[in-house]
Amino acid sequence: MLAKLSTCQTADLTQPGASILMKQSEALAREGKINEAIEGFKIAQKWNPSLRFDPVARANQLANDAKTDIPPMIQSTQ
Image 1 (cartoon, rainbow, N blue to C red):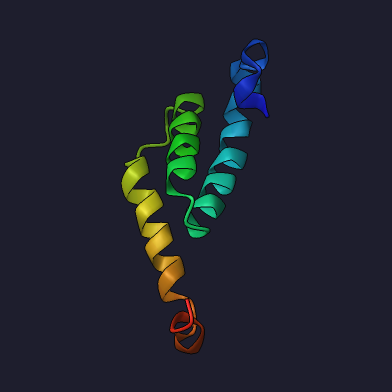
Image 2 (tube, rainbow, N blue to C red):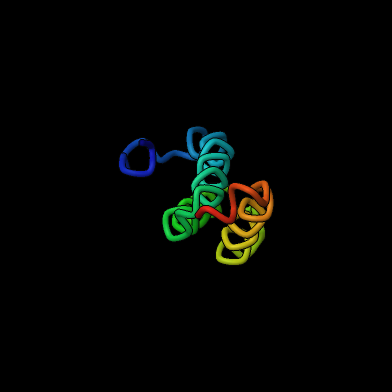
């Protein structure tokens, strides 16, 4: 992962990588992996400073939205 390779973290690589990291972090949040999602959002913001949002709020909102998207019958068995 580009986040772990500091020598590869040039603006021409990290800027486009931020959008990929955003998508991965959104997926993590929907899976309930809030802490991992928050960390990914923070790295994406570091790579692309034009991304302005609260990583904690976004991760929690996506996780909550994912919970409400589960059909009631399935929800009751979890």
